[in-house]
Image 1 (cartoon, one colour):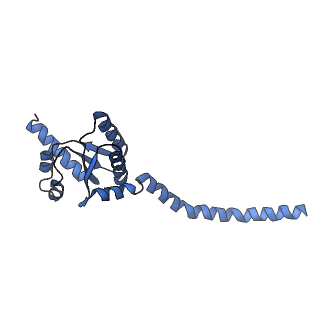
Image 2: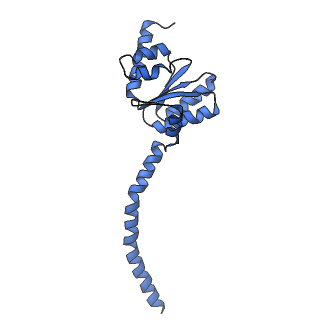
Image 3: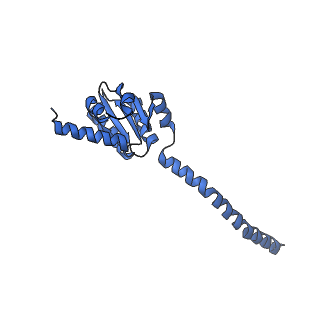
Length: 170
C-alpha cells in the first residue's frame, strides 16, 4: 500500500518527466518477464530515456490541469509503462519498435509535444535516423566543400609536378 507521501512523490516525478521529456510513450508491458524489462530499461538508458511503471490513477493526477490529460486518458487502462525520451526521440522509438517485434510489448501511443502519435506513427518515427546518424550526415555535408577545395588546391602543384616529371623523361 502506497502512502500519501509516496503517491505525491510519484505524481510530482511523473509530472516533471512529462514536462521535461521531448517525447513520451505509453506501452503495455503485460507478458514481459523481469529479465526482458531490465533489458528494455538498459536499452532505453543508452538513448537517454527512462521507463517508469506508475499506477494509471497517479498519472491521471499528474496530468491534471494539463492539455495532455484528455489525449492520454483513453490509453490509461491495463498494465502500462511510461517511456520518457529526454534527448533522442527516434532512437527511443526505434528501441521500442524493435523490442515490440521480439516480445509481447505493445505500443499504445506516444506524445511529441502536444501531438498524439498512433502506433503506425511511432513505427514511422522509429524508421528515421537516430540523433548520432543525423549528426554524422550533417558533418559530412558540412565538410564536403572543404574537402573538394583542398583537392583543387592540391591538384595544381600535383599537375605541375607531373608535367615536370614528364618533361624530364623525354
